[in-house]
Amino acid sequence: MNLHGKDIKIFSANSNPKVAHEIAKELGLPIGKSDVTVFSDGEISVSIHESVRGSDVFVIQSTSAPVNRNLMELLLMIDAFKRASAGRITAVIPYFGYARQDRKAKARDPISAKLVADLITTAGADRVLTMDLHAPQLQGFFNIPVDHLLGVPILLPYYNEKFKDSKEDLVIVSPDLGSVTRARNFASRIEAPLAIIDKRRQRANVSEVMNIIGSVEGKRVILVDDMVDTAGSLCNAAKAIIEKGGAREVYACATHGVLSGPAVERIAESPIKELVFLDTIQLPEEKKLDKIKQFPVAPVFAEAIERIYLDKPVSPLFI
Image (cartoon, rainbow, N blue to C red; front, side, top):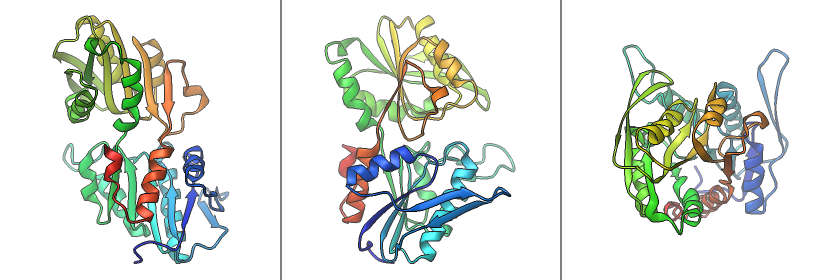
């Protein structure tokens, strides 16, 4: 395997072409010429229309809904580049699907995240570049290097500016115990106290808020999470913070806006004043609300790609 290819080439499949084009623009490069389509029987067809021999190829594809199709597109593109003698192949996965299936929750469960990691490696990827894995230990599921970017450095400047004159009234809240580390990091960097929602999940995508650990009475609250799926946990937490905790206002932010099922309706009816996502997942028009904002990840991914190509450390992007 080469340390890096002779030049950088950026390719995109179909899950988030907008981010791919923005990353290429940041790097001053064109998007590689390729087509990812579907045959009449439903099989995916990949055609690469330019030479990649010896090149450092970056394939940009979030494995968001439709998850299985987007994952298969990524695998087939990686395989195509491997067979076309690319010098090095990096799978750039802004949102990594299947990340929540990282352990056996009950008897006879698969560990799907490990299988997906193996599939990406077997397809021919030499490294992975992703952002805010649901469980950071997923990096250990791969036998190739994984560069794990964080969304907090993108979100922080916005909130530092928004609440620069009222930080004494600000409290950062983790919507569950699993997000405490992320929320604590956010709280320490914005210099605000931390509170935690203690909840009990009865079954998948259904949760019940139990207690609020910490004081939020009369405060402006920012709920911090890695993703919002059906928005049940987030909206229940926001409701509890207002009704049980006595908070004045609730804001929320997360890296990934999955927004499946009744998520949009729940967010619209919730007391959340504003919800901020990064654009790791492309939001269709029907899921856009006035209270939802999206910030671009392209500048961070572009810098990471440049650093990977030049064999420079990616860690400065975490600061």
